[in-house]
Image (cartoon, rainbow, N blue to C red; front, top):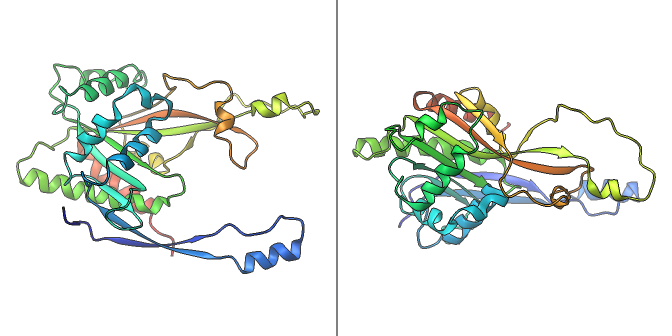
Length: 291
């Protein structure tokens, strides 16, 4: 299939400075000589012949430890079965693996597919904070709930997100003009959050440790910063623990260059169909490239 999305984004990323931190003059010189990476991001339609394995990787990252509860091959195939809806972001041409993706699946239209049955059942066990969701996802419901699946590698800039959402709006509009079944009554965005927890490695360290005050109100951080914007347009949201919890050292396995461990949670946001366009506009304004 020929490339339909022609938009490119020019991003300059910095290489990490070279130096061991012991010599200030060396560090200053390294900062001055810091290399810059010049990266072009390109948006493509999902490619059934190219993107299967890349999508599975990103889906596995999105669902974290609960990815094993779903047939990700079937889910990737379902995403690729609607190649004119949704986007991937790549840096090395159409034949390369995606670094990010966004799509929407109609939970009502695909309700007879096993992976959608599994996903719907899973969501219904996690939606205590969204009381409207059980009725919307009930077998007898005629609600057209579009589940938005989106994920990206952790070092991808958030500025790639607004084009994907804007393209999705445009593609849904085209689909409706063609009398296709994409008039969604609601959108359900699946995402991830995390809290910082005391490192088990530090607890086990034999050296004396200063006692730290435990804050009962743990701050929630967002892997996807656009989620905080979506909250303002949502009729409900929920963060919840994964079913397949990792062992006690799992938080430390996600600890990189920081003192605290990372405890991830799943997250979902329910938005009425009529408010989705306004939410997308707000994301575009919030994540507009800084000039």
